Amino acid sequence: MYIAAKMGLEEFPPIFFTAIRFSLLLFCLSGFLKVPKNLRLPLLKIGFLMGVGVYSSLYISVSLATNTSSLAIFSKLEVPVAIILGVILLNEKVGIKRITGIAIAMLGAALIGFDPAAFDNLPALLWMIISACFGAYLMIKIRELGDVHPLTITAWVSLVGAPFLLLISLIFESDHLVVIENSTTLGWSMLIYTGVMSSVVAHSGLFYLLQRYPVSQIAPFSLLSPLFAVIGGVILLGDELTPALIIGGCLILFGVGWIIKRSR
Image (cartoon, rainbow, N blue to C red):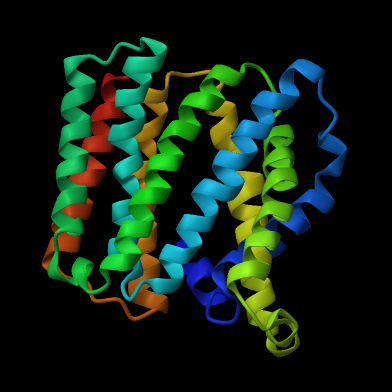
């Protein structure tokens, strides 16, 4: 997702990119908006957290980044925050064996994150930290939501995100018509890809899992995504593959493997 987003953001301003993405998703998923009245307010809150909080800060971060690989690693700060919130807010139990796996994986993330290449663009990293904090709290709210169809959650995120982000884009970004006129097939393809593969496939699957398993068991698996971001960044974007990236990636795999082995 980070690679596709980075390529798409070469042609679109970040907030406008996200607003178009959610507008397309809303059109495709409008049939999933019908829910009982008691679910509307919780879904509106989740829609604001993800549609406005997570994605606006995430795409601003990606648009500013000079090294997508290190940026993807920093996004995993949501894992320890989500686990801590799961213990505090949901009274979830985290055993010492799973804590050990998480610690090993986060050591790998820290090794990559503190590589000198990660500090070339501090504003991008700060925006990613903001996005990660929103994402961690989002996991808790979805866990509390109960049994709601994953595509319904995605539809409501789009319902809230599309108008809010479009308004923000109109205020803080400019030349929207010029951007659309100059956009290429590649730019639109990356926009559609991030919408379908990230929101419909990946996030709907995440919502499904969070409704059925503890946050502390699901959150660590997102540590795998930086590995794909690192590979894609090196191959497609020319990111530098440093020893810290290699060693840190191996630690992440080992830590996640440990969690899988020790989880029920």
